[in-house]
Image (cartoon, rainbow, N blue to C red):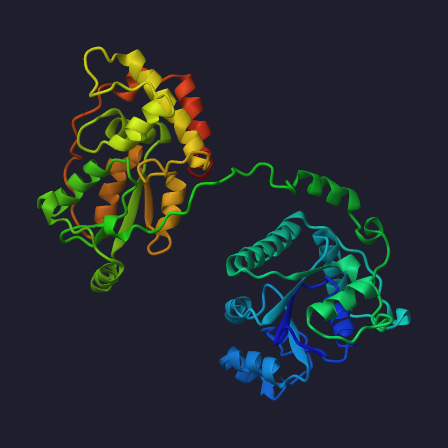
Length: 475
């Protein structure tokens, strides 16, 4: 026997056939499965006291001790079954250990849910003799099944994503595969065990072999509920936008008040900074920025009761601001190289230099629409140009903040004055009397060019922001 791995884990869930799989794994010479080793309510099996000399108290204090015992003390190769609600502390070490073989057992989630409902009703979780079989029907509960399905899918996606990133693969077993001795023998070979079975262990019996229509008392109601569920997630908003980091150096700390601003680029940043300065009666130069994570953590510790916030802007306003600030102009703030590429490669109808008297509202509307068309492809990963923070989705930017500091408050620009006033009062600071307005530096304000096509192009580009934040049409 040549072992490829030092240990194994069976990722499964209740009522997926994991008991049957374990009994067949234990039928191989050189394979030992130690039950639900990290079930928070027992160790291995409901009436077990320890595994390989490690008791439950020791395991709970230091799960690594049991992991090591299973790996090092089992004769041959040892492993265990792990469900999504087992000790979360062992999941990362398991996945990161490429000497631990991963076996993933799956079952149709409707069948596993119905089986779980029946077992919970009868109290019978295993069956070794049909004479002891307890019969019952399940009552389908749509909300309960939805929670069940979400938990299963989230865990499966976690496993898939982590293994992909770690460059590992797993041996997948479907519930229906459990009746195949060839598949079981293939699994043993995957684990590096030479021993093969002639037949499966039949000591465990299928508890409810009837069709699912006979096992559910409200079967028609279940069919209606399942029909309302989007099994393939067809209504999701696809997201091909690259992840963003927390961009901590862009955060702004008030001079004295315990307030932290997480700016979303192309938002009302100048107005907010003016307000923060006025709050403490200082100039904008007194605001603290360009802090690193260590410095910001120190600031947080020194300012108990601090509040953090960000400000959302309507996607049409925000796209127009980014366009005017970085693409239309050739002066300060212009992305000159990108501007040239957009003109040459994407045929964007921009003036060669700064907009002059020949650049009218119709020309501005046409150029902005071309930019919105570019944005849709850019955000979907269809261009060779980076997704800049000036026009990335606000949803992705806020998600990036969450890697270090989620904002306490997400304020909308159209409620800015009232919300900032309430925020100041929440930390015991008297807010400024009024919000300072900023002069418009754009050649045309959005109201001069806005139409239904601009709204459609923007909503196509920023589907996630419209959906996640509930934005309505502009205006």
